[in-house]
Image (spheres, rainbow, N blue to C red):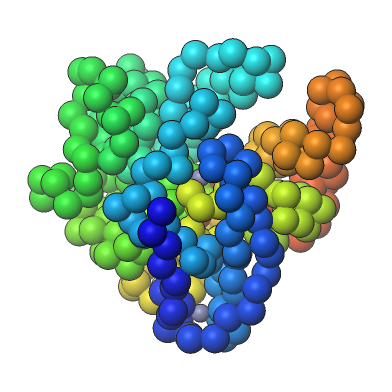
Length: 291
Ligand SMILES: [Zn+2]
Ligand SMILES: [Zn+2]
């Protein structure tokens, strides 16, 4: 495996970093990766990281189920049930802004696109992995670059930007495809949430080395403003605190039985949401962005 170091912060071009965490890849390789933090703007990133052309290998795992549609364990079944609830929730969130056309970047097997298509929205997807090949009846592209120059009123990236190597280039591509009064929704984990602090380096949303960027609210606003866009609203994803905490308990492995792990995970998830009611630091945040 060829690794590369990130020498300069993609947000502020800072060159000095401190080590924030040493995290393990629990779902695929079992390897260890460092999460570094930029000394000048606090942005966090995985470094060294796999080079982009080899990063696909780290997605090949039985446990990486976010792109699959069949469930094996009880945990996976809960995950898929929550996902169907979330599909409807996301649809209701974007509906006031769609006015007809949607581009979903990192669409996986296309669950969200199919859902929106049934509701009468004209949908297009981008997905670099082979998951794309299982999508039928929807126009999809392997990369953003291949999408024809047509304006979309809504562009969504649900837990995708933290995986994408060319950060600025991607946001500029999104801007090119955005209708004049269009809206971009970007959902990413929040490394300043209480569940992130509680689980420290076993927090499931570090998800190294698939997650190469680790945002705080400040980091995202900084990036978006530097790209000439505006953050209009920040919306919490409360279910993520539970999902991420359950997964983190599994990685932590301190409970002997799955039932104890589930109780502990639920407790930490609820605790995170409760504390976020005061400071807004939910486990995952959605940024509603416009020109
Ligand atoms: Zn920086
Ligand atoms: Zn992710």
